[in-house]
Amino acid sequence: MKGLLVKDLCLMATQKRFFILILGVGALLTFGGQDIIFVMGYMMMVFGLFSGSTISYDDMNHGMGFLMTLPVSRKQYVRSKYLFMFLMIAVSLVVSVLFSFLGSTVGTVMLPQDMVGTAIVISAVMAVLVSVFMVLIFKFGAEQARVVIAVLAGIGFFVAWIFQFIGEKMDGKLLINLNIANLSNEVVVLGCVGIAAFVILVTYIIAVKVMENKEF
Image 1 (cartoon, one colour):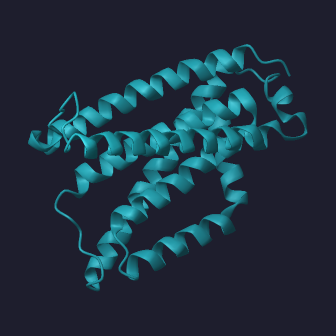
Image 2: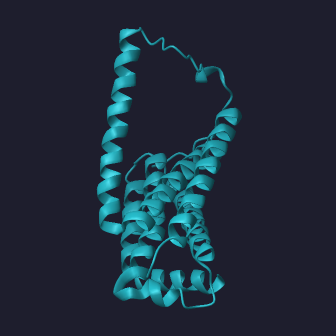
């Protein structure tokens, strides 16, 4: 499995111009006074989605069939993609936090006191989104996965609009009042991490089953 991670890192090295461009955009947003939370989410999403796109690179020119002849199992292949995803999100997190520190030195961006909690929550959310994206790629392929994601995003916005509409009609009182405002930041962060870990585990199990049932 170590060889699979090295392969993805080498693939990342071939795309260095792309990542330099992304880092440049992140720096411009940071020193331009953009909210660091937005920059952090942007960096994590781009780096995280790249980990999912490596599956498409592996599948090009029947490359997946060749990889499966190597002494690695399909489960190890899926595991390597998830580990690579965590690595990419961690790298983007470190870079974005570094940008925030550098931005604060010139007075354009102030590092919030709750940066740690915010970073953990954003990392958890992005890891969930990328893990779902990878499952869709394993199941449908890169092109169809983008279509499915667009449909799911549309459904998500529609559901959010319905809840907002119901909330307005009921003067903000839904049938179940979670009363999140009364929860401490630590509880909210731990809750987000717990939910994210559960979703990621489920997507991992699904991805392994999909991969094991595939024919190359």
